Amino acid sequence: MIRRKFIKKGFINLGAVLISPSIITSCKKDDPIVGKSVIVVGAGISGLAAARQLKDKGFEVTVLESQEKVGGRLRTNNSLGVAFDEGASWIHGINSNPITDLAQKAGMNTFHTVDEDILSYDIGGALRSENVFNNAEAAYFDILETLMSNGSATKSFSTVFFEKYPQYANDRLWNFFLSTYMTFDRGDLDKTSSLLYNEGEEFDGIEVISTNGFDLIPKYLATGLAVQLNQRVTMVDYSQEKVKVTHNGTISEADYAIVTVPLGVLKQNSIQFVPDLPAIKQTAIEKIGMNCVNKFLLTWDTAFWDDVQYITYTPEIRDKFNYFVNVKKFHPSVNALMTFAYANYGRQTEIMTDAQIIEEIMVHLRDIYGSNIPNPTNILRTKWNTNINSFGSYSFTAVGTEMRHFEDLAAEVNNKLFFAGEHTEVDYFSTAHGAYMSGIREAEKIIDLQ
Image (cartoon, rainbow, N blue to C red):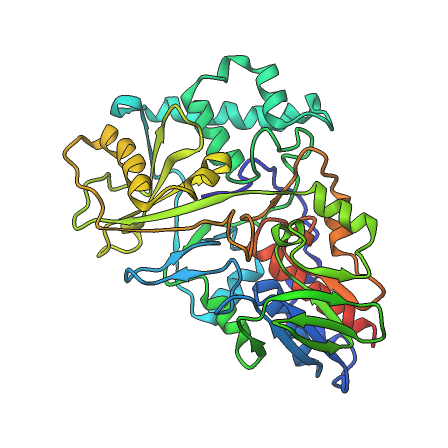
């Protein structure tokens, strides 16, 4: 599962990422900071990273979280006896990635998923040859290297792509690549920028998937922090000397506040800011896109599928249950598959019942493996687009987005109000490691003010 697989690796200025938070802190003032307070809104990985950094420097830190547990979009459901990560599942490139070290410290186990361990099926259960799949994939990546030269600030990726390559509009394999390699990574093809679809950096190294829960990382970061759960923030007033945060009808105040809620929550105006946020920040909130990717875990009493890491299927509907992760490869005693729905079809699944979801998934699996395979015994699923704590999965470069908008979202206001989250990290947006890095970044800003 290589996100941003098509980006050329280059010289990445890792900066502070290569330096552990403890070393960064030791480069600042040696004495602890006394008498200064910070409220962190959101106990996702960015908020917890910031809170941990600040607490270690002596700040009085309070974290307010709207959900019943820490983690934000790093949520793990263990109800079926296997870790189903509702949000982040993979560490994308383990070399120099700060999540790699965090995962080890948190006790997270991982498994190397090999992208080449894959089979591709077409309608009618026709197995594609490896050469056909690989050649089409290589051609797809070649196109992505140059398509932006035909891009326009006012045209979407799909408009430009199909204007230049109309022969692929009804090609099921090409639509599979557009779905799983572009829509999954970015967002709706008719909303993704035709100029910025390849923006962002990546870490080198293999891809690994968590096998015992990505939520071990936020749990680890939250240890010893003052986290108040089930606290929905409705107002942040930074008009006076102290920042006042209203949550569940209570007002808490501090010298600084860091807002780490997802971009989707900001888009919904779920939090009132007093005074209103600067116009450039409001523009950034509007212009950056918010993707929807929903995940589905299904279990059976016995496995009937191929013994490969990934099973792909190319239906007529582009973003519909076309990619299956074989969970049995890293949990040999568990007969489970994980699949996905993207963009508008992903949103559509949120109004479907479990039975309807199972029926649609089984149409694809029965086309591959025959009509006699059984229905699953259990299903777990996500509904990220209607989740009031996220309103989407992660940010992307939409038509109208400019890369400066990510930096505008990261800009502090009056040296009192700060913002973190994957949507504020211009080089690593839409990733867990980007979210983590943004929390460290904002904590360092506050430390530098002392």
